[in-house]
Amino acid sequence: MKNIINTTNAPAAIGPYAQGWYTDTLVFTSGQLGIDVETGKLAEGVKGQAHAAMKNVGAVLAEAGADYSDILKTTVFVQNLDDFATVNEIYGSYFSDTYPARSCVQVAKLPLGGLVEIECVALRK
Image (cartoon, rainbow, N blue to C red; front, side, top):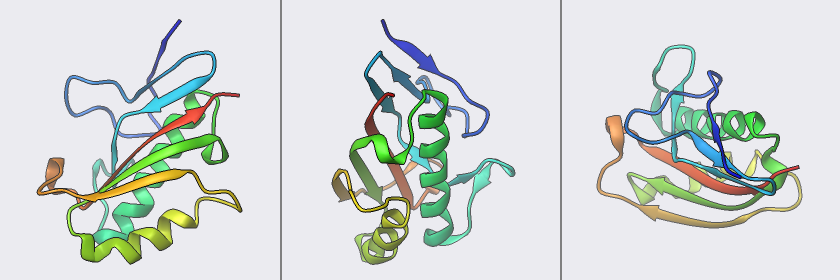
């Protein structure tokens, strides 16, 4: 059985998609932009957006009974690959000693003019 994830602790979907879905064992998040939940707007700069995107991923995971340590795979989308080192440092700070598998790709454009978007697949506790 699959269950929709719907939390007010992460930005609402800006299109016809869910924040994520979970099953008995897995969680799939939609891409999370660097939107500050309190303001509803993109955080300032790539650092702010990277932190906000990771926090939003964490909020979606938490709603499904998972956390960063349960992530198996992430995909990170950046508007400018020159920001890779900055995003990488911030991304890494959300994990302890074990990192998930990851892809990072530069894209031509992200929704709302975002600089970073992150999605993941995680185990569900």
